[in-house]
Length: 217
Image (cartoon, rainbow, N blue to C red; front, side, top):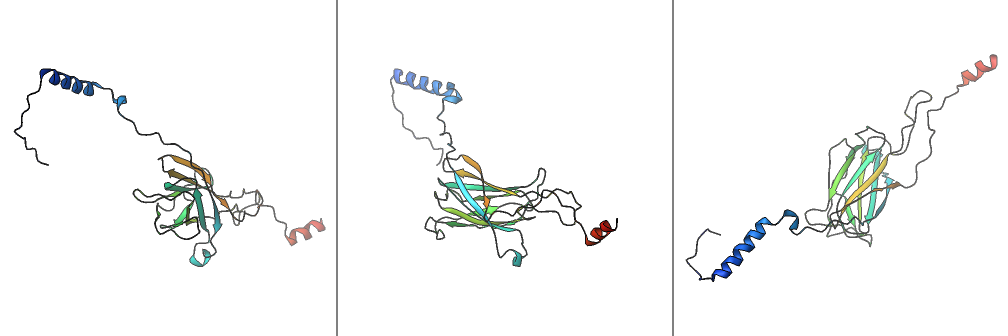
């Protein structure tokens, strides 16, 4: 639109002009807090999901590949998956699926929802979203995969000396942004089936030669 000035003049009573001027001054002088505020996001969403070892991971050169799947009680527009193991470790994720699948409540892939994930590797997590204005419907599931640098379950360091602590199990969680704009979580994603137990430390080994020498003494 141009800045053209129309040659139309109206003769207004002085009282109207005075009221208009007062309104303008009142608007200018109004404190910032008087402006209409946006609704406060309400963090009311709950989510749940699982992890499972991907059977095809080893053949693809990704022996620590995990599949994840979760859903939430309200629509979500984005989510972040984090992987923690020990304090200070910042390289737990080796790779990830860039385009997870949205699964409807009927169990079929969604034709109207699209998920995109981004992140650097190695790192401790990835960020995913449903695109501008997009949402994953309530109880529709996000189904994707992440490849860990080390096994998910606790394990004993190979060739470690006796008494060396076991490497703890990874902790995989998801934080979501729901349809109110609030962030909810973290929600823990549990492994199915559960991990096998391992000793807390590398156990001492007794060799056959050691047994024989013990008998001689």
